[in-house]
Amino acid sequence: MRGVGAPAWTSLLATRRLGAGDDPDSAPRSPFQRDWDRILYSPHFRRLAGKTQVFPLPLDDHIHSRLTHSLEVATVGRSLGTLVGHRLAHALPPGVAPRDVGDCVGAACLAHDLGNPPFGHAGEDAIREFFARHRDAAWCAAFTPTQQGDLLEFEGNALALRLATRRAGPLSPHGLDLTCATLGALVKYPCASADAQGPSAGRKSRAKHGIDTPELPVFAEVAEHLGLAPEPDPPSRAWRRHPLAFLTEAADDIAYQIIDLEDGLRLRHVSQSEFIELLRPLLAADPRCPPLEPRRERDAMLDLAGTLRSLAINTLIHEAADVFEQAREAILDGEFDAPLVSRIGSREAVGRIRRKNVDACYSARDVLKLELAGSVAIQAVLEALIGAAVAGDSLRSKHLRKLLPSVYVEADPYTRVLRITDFVAGMTDHYVVRLYRELSGIRLPGGRD
Image 1 (cartoon, helix red, strand yellow):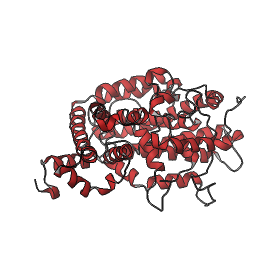
Image 2: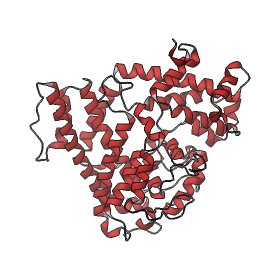
Image 3: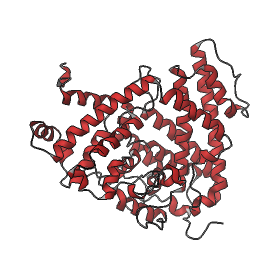
Image 4: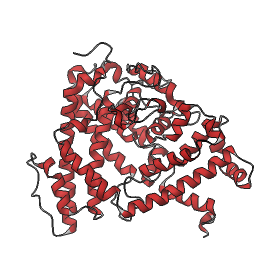
């Protein structure tokens, strides 16, 4: 029985777009399919092709970028959401089909990494470290504590929401103008930076922040339309997580753990026997599973790996759907606040895969070296661009402001610094390295070394 104050699926699946009222009928595309299309054709999504998933600037073209990762997460999310939608069929409002739930989750998954900076999570760390070094500078000290937190705890998740909602010219006053339901499913951490409690607090939705200061009024409006209650302490900067955000999170957890392991196999950081043994527990109950033994020929082994990856993901999708169904009322009441994958029957097997990825893939020497180089480039570019915004009378600063006028258009100091940070976070791996070399005089513009 749903508790008092828990939102109904009629509001949770609201197709209203900010400033536009209810979404007009545009058959044969549903509102959530339109969300998918708007994300897919956005420049933010296109740039993910040049951003790291795990292995920066790989020589093997089969290795995942953030774009291919996002497409695969979206596919997992669409399948997971549709499966859950069928189980929710009796509770869905009139005119809403199970596939609509899948399309909503799929669209949120497609957008989940729009704010990811170059060089992946190492890029996030590099941005945070840059602002930590400058937290006592006069320009940073003048910001409010919440504004400082936005920068000191820079979050690609929060930038994804900003890119989805920020004005992008007179024809796009609300950015991508996604439905409220998709925005709700996108925001896995519905709180401001000052209200995040850290990963050890026990509440996954407050482990980090997903809303920067400029988007707080925007998300408050979204939450009102969706029926998401604000948390009582504090009342205005943290909200209950949208139930479908649990599915967005699960789709990401499922996809990256399995697919990062497959990339590790392709790059020989994971052996054939290790790959098979790690996936074996996820395949035991599937009658379609082929014989589990290493293949003598490498191409045959990689083909087998693709089949095993597909079957393993299918197992995890069904287990995550089971957990959601079991916890559905607690999720609606705001009492459940944990990753679905942490409660599935195969959680120990997933934990072993995660540890192998950390040891063999994320800590590989070539990964660490490229992430180190990327971090140097990111911080140097931030130093130059923000220096031109806050200290600005040098020849370098004047030239940068002339070369990049749209980056320096904001009058408010915090908004200007945030805009510059967004600009750097939006760069591809190659571009931030090239710009660093040009600003440092290592490479002359136009390729004249």
